[in-house]
Length: 248
Image (tube, rainbow, N blue to C red):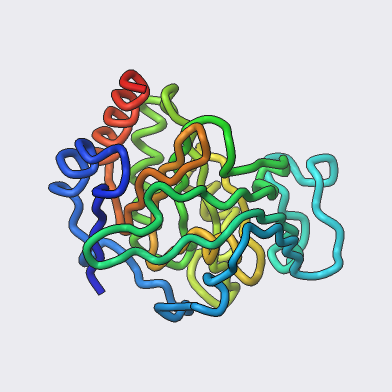
């Protein structure tokens, strides 16, 4: 399914319409999400804000002190034992004509990175581009490779925080385990690890891979983009976010 994004309900209509949409081609640069049903009404229709502690098993959370250098991965069961805390309501899926998540609070997630450190996304904090990836997705692999080269040459941006997510982790599919894939590509962006149920992806309304979510410093979703960006569109997005910060 080809999806599109509109900022008609948000406060970034200029860069969403002029900088992002003209250069984004949904097909064939994304991989459809393999497990979600289009309208998970039973979970989205939560009447009030909730706090949900998500645990895959009772195993303890791997800490930085116990992790091997450069990775929290310590044994084969690591990805089955990830512990997360998620607060808030799940974001709706992208619509055909507009994105109903624009202007909504991003779910706040507390988790661990592959580097072994605790990290959060959502809530008040730095403006963040959340890059959601699946290790088996060919478009994710191409995106990571292209952007890694760009970041190696230009460094990570100062105007916005970049954070990535490893989700839909499946040992039977390509590029498993994810930490080796990211290491082989010299991926410099911190990687938050989803649990075995891919709850972070669910709460962020992910419908395809790769998937980008822009969250402002108040914790509000201001843009979601399915599919590859590439260097040119990423630069336009970074420039638009920088200009938005000046206006605000």
